[in-house]
Amino acid sequence: MSKHSITTVTLDELRLKRARGEKSQTDWARVDAMTDEDIDRAIADDPDWAEFKDIDWSKATLVVPKPKKSISLRVDEDVIDFFKSTGKGYQTRINAVLRHYMREQKRRNK
Image (cartoon, rainbow, N blue to C red):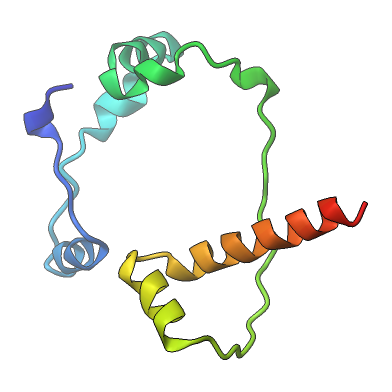
C-alpha cells in the first residue's frame, strides 16, 4: 500500500462527510477478497509492523479494563495544570501514577 493512498480524518470530519452523503473511498470488495495469506503478506511488508514480527502472539492475553469510578477530587492547581499540559488522556495518566503508587505501597507492606 502506498502512502499517497492513506488519508486521515477526524471523527467530526467523518461525520460531516457522512452527513453530506459521501461514500467511503475504501475498496471494500478488494478487502473482502483478500485471503489470510494476502493479509499476512501485507502485514509482513508493512514497515510499521517490523518491530512486532518476532513476537509470539499466541501467548497474548486479552486484558479488559475494569470500569472506572467517577469521583470528585481536589487537586492542587499546578498538579492538574501539569497533567493537562501533557495532552489528551491526562486523567488516564493521573490514574496510572496513582496505580503505581498503590502497587509500590502494597509491595512494601508485604
